[in-house]
Each structure stands twice: as structure tokens, then as C-alpha cells.
Image (cartoon, rainbow, N blue to C red; front, top):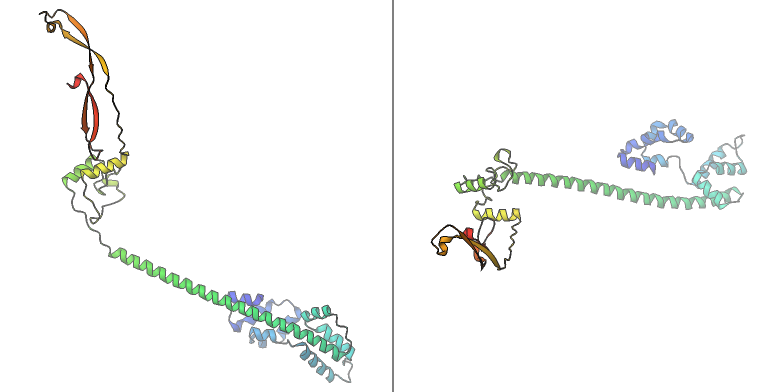
Length: 305
């Protein structure tokens, strides 16, 4: 499984897979087996390499028995007891685990081979299902990887197309030059802390350090006194309060020459206390910060008369 994951992430070519992983095999027997026929092994696909030298148990047992037959009459020939021991000692490691788990006690060679053969068939069916599941998972992973790459390419292409279209739209948009300001507009800007470049009222900057630049003539609105009033009202909050003044009687002192009193001389003064209600005047007030006249009650003093 580790080799397959390595091939998937490194995108290794089929003809290079065996050569890439063979030197990573840690089992000395596998290493010797590879080195004895390295040129042939390197030409195999990875699937053929895994199948090389691997046989089902019964096929392998028959092959060993055939080779033992050729040794009949020599000291190297094995009897049934030693042959059974040889087969048990050299069988596949996974099969060995299952063999001892089953506790097979058969001593007759051909019956023992049949029981181990059934156990091996069971293991091979399990390995086949496992391999099919792994192949399906790898196939799905490859399909997702291709789909993600395709989606990324399409998104990149769409982004480039959108950016190109935005640039084209920006390049085709025309700027309309603002006509010369009138004398009235000049005066309004001058009186209301305006900028003569961006034509903003209460701008807080001048033409020399204007951060906005010239306005577009298609969206520019002519400056008028009404615009000034609206701007000021928004800027100052436009809060107007009224005070209710109640009329009351107040004592006042009048100082007059004595001649006025009719004695014909101006040598003395008389002070006479007089009492009169306050003079009030209902009037309308207007100014640059209001949009309509405001009704107001005003108090009149002698200074106003």
C-alpha cells in the first residue's frame, strides 16, 4: 500500500516503478532475489514484480514435491515427514499465522497439504477483496484529483477572462471634463472653505494637496445657495431651539429734565417710578442654516426704539 501511495503522489511511470522501490526492500532474501536477476526484474511492471515467485500454496507444494522427486536415490531426498516440515517452514508468513491459529494437527502429507490449501484459498479470497477495495479507492482519488485540477484550471481561466473584461471596461470608460466654474460657484467655494479642484464644500484641503482630483462632468452638480444650506445643516446638525418668554410687569425708572415737568427751569431732576408691561414682537428669522423662516417672539428694550 505504501508503494502505491508513493507512485500516486510522485506520478511514477510504469516502467520505472520496480527500479524506484526495489532498493527499499529490507528483507535480505528479497534483496538477493532481486539482485540475482535485476535486469529482468527492472523490465517488469509493479504488478508482475509482486506476482514474480509467488504461487498459491498447493501449486507451490506440488512444485516442491516434483523437485524432491528428482532427488530420489540421493542424500538430499526428503521423506514425507521432512517434506511436510520443509513446506511448513517456508510457507507464506501470513498463511503461517492463520495456520497456527487453526491448530492443524494432521500428520499425513497429502491430507495436510489439502487442509492448508483450503486455508490458503480463504486467505486469497480475502486478499482479492482487499485489493479490489484499494483499487476502487485509488481510482476515486485519481478521479477527484483530476476533477480538482480541472476546476482549478477553469477558475483560473474565468478569473483571467473577468480581469481582462474589467480592464477593457475600465479602458473604454471616458472621462467628461468639467466646464469652467461660474463666478457664483467660485464665490461659494471661497466663502465655505471649498476646494477649487474637486469642488467639495468644507473640504478641509486646498487645490495643491487635493486627494480626490477633478470631478467627472457627467455626475457634477452645480453649486447653489440651497446646496450650501443643506451642507451646513448636515455638518452642524441643524439644531434650532426656541425659548418661550412670558410677559411680566416690570418697574422702570425714567430720568427727565425738570423743564419737562413744566416749572420752566432745568435746575433739578425728578425721578418718577413707572410700571409698564414688556414690549414683545412676533417676528420671522431667516438665515443660511435654515431652509425656511422661523417664528420667534422678541423682547424690545428702549435701545431698540
